[in-house]
Image (cartoon, rainbow, N blue to C red; front, side):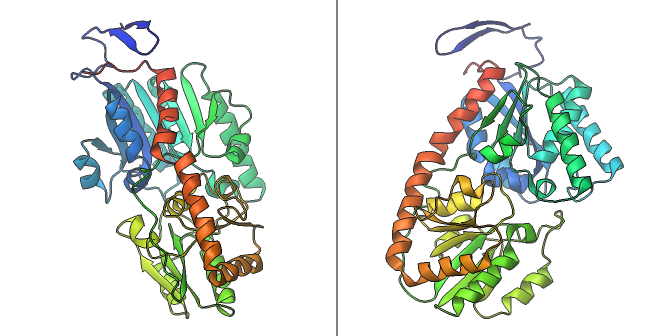
Length: 399
C-alpha cells in the first residue's frame, strides 16, 4: 500500500517495499508507448528527460529500428514492441494488443503514456485487459482517418470517438491534443487538454544570419507523404520560379508504413525538375533549416507540426495551408502566410513575394522566433505535461 500526504509543494510517500509500482531504485515507472523509435526520439526526448529529473524511471515501448543507440545512450530502457505499423490486419493488431498487455502486467508501471492514435487505441485496449494504472492518451494529430471522406471513414471515426469515451476514467486518465481543432472532434471527453506541441530546446536550432543571394531557397522537412502536400509544394514552387529565382529542397525519407508515402522513384523523378532537389534524410533538422530562406508545409492536416516549430526556432518565415495544426502556429502576415487549403496559386504568389522582398522575410522570420520562444520552447510546454502526470500519480520522491 501507499499512503499519501500532500503538502503545498510536494508529496511525501510511505512506501511499502512490496508495492509493485515502486522500483528498486525508489523511482516510479513511467511507460511511454509509441509506434516508432524515430518518432519518439525526434519529438519526446525533452519530455523524457524532464520526467526522469522528477523521479520517474522512464521505459520506452516502441518498434525499435534506427534509434536504439541514441535512446539507450540517454539512459532509457527500451522494450521492442516488434509491431509493423503498415500492417492493419486483425491478427497483427491482436498480437500487438497481447504484447502490450504482457508488458503492462510484467512492468507494473505507475503511469502509462500512449502517444499517437494507433498507440492510444491499442494501448487503451491492452490497459483494459491488464488492469493498467492511470493512463495519459496523447493524440498527436488525427491524420489520414480524419482527412478521408466516405461512409467507411466516417464510421471508423464514430467508433474511435465512442471507444476513447469509454477510456475516460475520472481521476485515472487524461487526454491531450496538440490543437483546438482536434480537441473539438472529441466533445465527449471530459479530461482533455490542449498542450500545443511537446517542447523543443530553445537553443537547439538558432536563427542564422540570412543570406540575400540567389536562389531564394524554400525548404520542406518531414516525411515524404502525399498527405504532407509534397506534390502541391513542387507545383507552387515551379509557378513561383517563373517570376523569381527560387528553388526547393525536400528533406526527409519515404515512409513505407504510411499509405500516402511517395516512393524513392517518385522522389528521384521530382528531383529531375529544374530547381527541385530531394536531399534525403537530414542528419539533424538544423542541417536543413540553416540552408533555408522560407519554410513550407502544405499538409492536409496536422497535430502541431514539428517542422514549422523547428523553422520558427530557426527564425524563418512560414508558409502553410489554413488547416488544423498549421493554423495554430502560423499567423497570416505576422510570422508567415496562412493560405486557403488547396490554393496553389496563392502559395505561388506568397513564395514569389517572399523571394522578392528580403526585408519581409526577415520581419516575418523574427516574429516566428519570438512566437517559438513564447509558446513552443521546452520550458514553456513541458511543465504543463508534468502537471498532467502529477494530477494522476503523486510526484515520486527524489533520492
